[in-house]
Length: 346
Ligand SMILES: [Zn+2]
Image: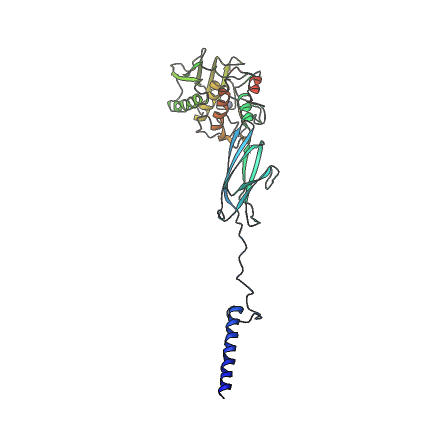
């Protein structure tokens, strides 16, 4: 009996050991052949490549092409995500390029060809590529194209309606010569509230020409003062002598090359914008730039259309273009060939 009991104990110990082994090997004490049991560690969720968001683009025209700076946000940044930028000439297109931004949240695309550019960005995480971000558009152009339009009214950014404004004739830049002091004669009926707009335009012109054009404002008692050499008149008139559809216009003398004197005219209903814009013609000899190809009328004081009525200074694009000309030692009187030799137009 003693032996039998010992055997009985030995049997129970053996069963207990087998159960412990099974508990360790079978996970939670259930048989591995259970139809409801998980077969291994809990499943890992596949990586979520969430699309980037808030894509925005800035255009900076350089001499040889547009520079586009794209920025976006991402909820998977830091998890090993990388990003690719898609640029196309149509919605959803990639014909301009698919560009690897690495793990950065921005990308600078250089020498982008002129025209409308559609851009998106995608995230890539563990070989899973996200849907695209929001799509943005940009009007791409080169600084050379902007300079050609602003000074000659021709090329890709030349005004589509053919109205160039008072600017280069016979292939020579207009405007007052470098270093020439210029006086703006105010007609006696010019409203006082327009003078800050005139002053703002002249201040931005001084910056654009690197100080090569210094202009003073001279009030007069004459309704329509007649300018002499080195003078610009700005007068309020009932009928414009040089344009029948606008609210202002400008006449530059002589009709070719550097200006010796000029006249700006405004109707009584003219806005601050008109005063500044006409002096852009009369003082600097600038042409119109096609608004629809530079991203909107607010992108140049000399836009062909769509200008905000309170705009009274040269735009950053205007200033970049004019500074490039003056930095090259050129200015009014220079020829188209002069600008081409300096690499300022194509
Ligand atoms: Zn104009």
